[in-house]
Length: 64
Image (cartoon, rainbow, N blue to C red; front, side, top):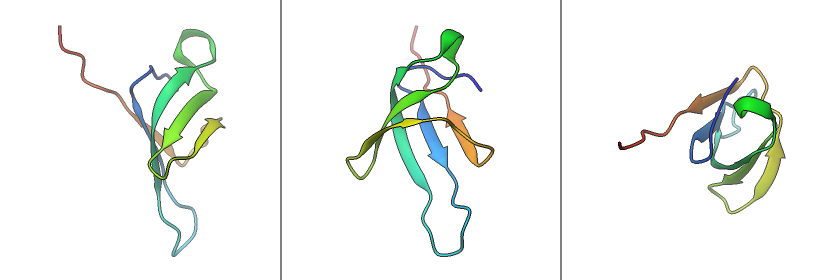
């Protein structure tokens, strides 16, 4: 998995009744865009994320 600052991270819920989580990647700490990622979530929390198989990166569109 590769990401850049500004990409969106979507963590899909693994349990019925639990909401998915979405956040913006604010820092990439691994080499060449690899995890872990510092993520600022929609609810205001910030955390270091090591994405699992239930996680998707939505790359931001860069204007040239």
